[in-house]
Image (cartoon, rainbow, N blue to C red; front, side, top):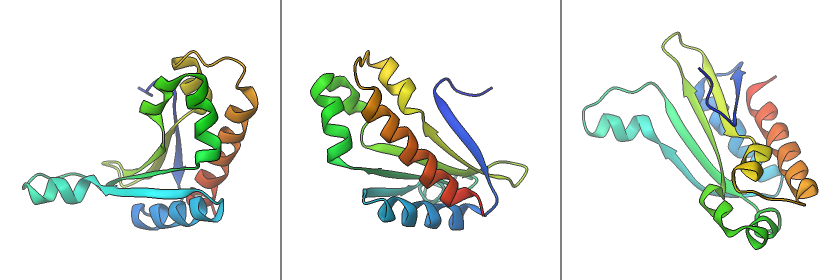
Amino acid sequence: MAAQGLTTIRSSHGPQETMNRLEAAVKAKGMTVFARIDHAAGASAVGLPLHPTEVLIFGNAKGGTPLMQSVQTIGIDLPLKALVWRDASGDTWLSYNDPAWLAQRHGLGGTEAPIGNLTAALDAVAKAAAVG
């Protein structure tokens, strides 16, 4: 079952390459990478198995600040995050929160342009990472 507000696309690359491509695409769009979290490495450190699962946290103050000025609670969902993961079948996936869903979740009104810009940017970096 798909999680509400979550966009997930299949990658034609392995998890490591998908994440590397995502990070490069984010930086090429002028966004800041704040962190790259390897959940599988954390699980391994405590003796637990986990398929490759890594999160990239990234954003741009010009895009996020106006949203937080409108409704500060969206700050819990900013900066943006993308998850790259491999399932039990060996397929690699890239998931991220849909900006329109985030706007709805926080009751943002009158932010169609910034949300549209975020959506376009996320779609572009996701496709650059997962396709081709």
